[in-house]
Image (cartoon, rainbow over all chains, first blue to last red):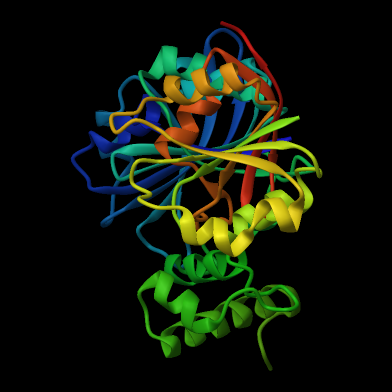
Length: 226
Length: 132
C-alpha cells in the first residue's frame, strides 16, 4: 500500500471558505457522513484570523446549512463546524472514496488543497490521480511512502479529535513536526536543533512548547494538578 | 534483469550503494542515466566501482538538455529495463519521499507500469511492463 500526499487547486467547500470576508488560515475536513440524495454532512475545523459569527457565515455560505458551530477552548480563532453541504462541495473526498482510495487528511491552505490518502499500488495511484486530474485540472504529487496498514482514515483519529482545542496551534504544530521527524523514536532520528530549524523557532521555544503539550496531555489523562 | 538508475546529483552515493547492494543482483546490466544538470559522474563511479565491488556491467547515458519524461521511458523500453531506481533526495515534513516533477511524470505515465517500492534512499519501480 502507498501513502501519497498531493496538492490540487482549492475546490468545493475549501474554496468557498477562502472566498469569505473573514480571513481563513486553513480549513480541514475532519469527517464526512453521507446523507440521502446528493448531500453530505461535513465536519470541519476552520482557522480564522479573528472572531466570526455563525450568522455572518450562514449569510455568506448560503448554499450550505451550518448545523453546528463551536469555538475551540484554547485557540479562540479555531472553529468546529458541522455543515450540510452538496456532495460536490467535497468532490476530492468523493473521488477518493469512489475510487476506493482511503482519505486521511484534506486541508485547504495557501491557495491549495493538501491531501493525504492511501492507495493500493502504482496502478491504483494512476487511476486515482487521473480521475482527480480530470475533475480538478491538475494534481501535484508531493510525497509517497510505503505502508503496511491503513492508519487513521479521515474522521478516525479519536484522540486527535479529543485533543483538538485543548492545545494551541503552535503546540500542536511543534508536536506533529517533532513526531513526524522522528524526535520521539528510540534512538532519536532528529535533534531538537533540527526541529527548531524546521519550524524556524529557537530551541528554548521548542522546548517550552513541547513541555506545555506534555502538561496538557497529563492534565487530560490525570486531571488538574492538586 | 536490467536496471536504470536515475542520477539527479553526484551526491547520490548512498542511493547507488543501496541499489547495488540490496536491489540489484550480481551479473545484472545497469544503465546509469544522469540528468543534464549532473555534469560528470566520474568521481561517483570511481568511488563505487560497480564492476569490481558489485559484479555488474554498466553504461552511463545522459538525458538531452531539453529532456522530457518520454526520453526516459523511450530509453527504458529500448533497453528492456525491468527496474527504474530514483534516488530520494529529500523527504517531506511527514517523512514521505519527496516527489519531483520527473518522478511524478514517470509515476503517472500511461506507457509504463509495475510495482512501486519505497526504500530508505530510493524509489524503486520494478516488474516494469510497457504499453506503447
